[in-house]
Image 1 (cartoon, rainbow, N blue to C red):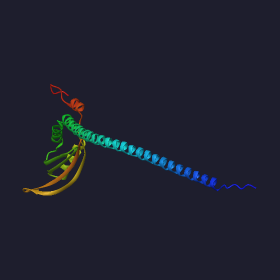
Image 2: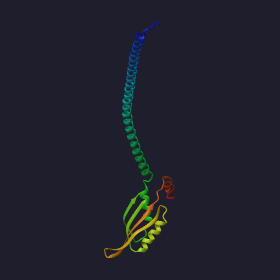
Image 3: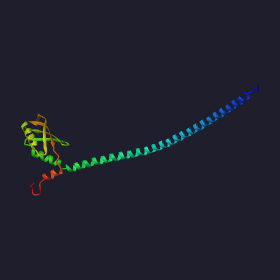
Length: 196
């Protein structure tokens, strides 16, 4: 019987398998390093690109903030101009209001009533004065209530005080002045010749 020694053949086969394993391990290591380097490079490129975008956006945000400040200033200036315009229009529309108020007060003031102070706050008019009696204050309130431009007379207080050697009644009275538009003022104005 012939005996064949297979040990060298097995050893050669093991050696070839080992070399093949080392070659594949090296190839996988190189491939992993290439993939890692490509991924690292790609991620760094993306980070740099995003940083550039962020820097650009920050610059644009600064520019937009400046523009928003300018727009805000322009709006404030516009609102201030509109407020001035409204005040001027209001003054223009009601420039004869004080004259109408004084004329109406003179018409409605009964004898024995003397005004000491007149104060107007928008449409509210506060009258402070002296009257010879409470009845004269009541007459004044009735007259003011019947006025076409004065309304809602409210007696705040009335008290007796000595004025010189006479006893007078000091009163505080609130009334409301109804504002007339320029059309109403034009209709109520007298035409030349004294006829309305």
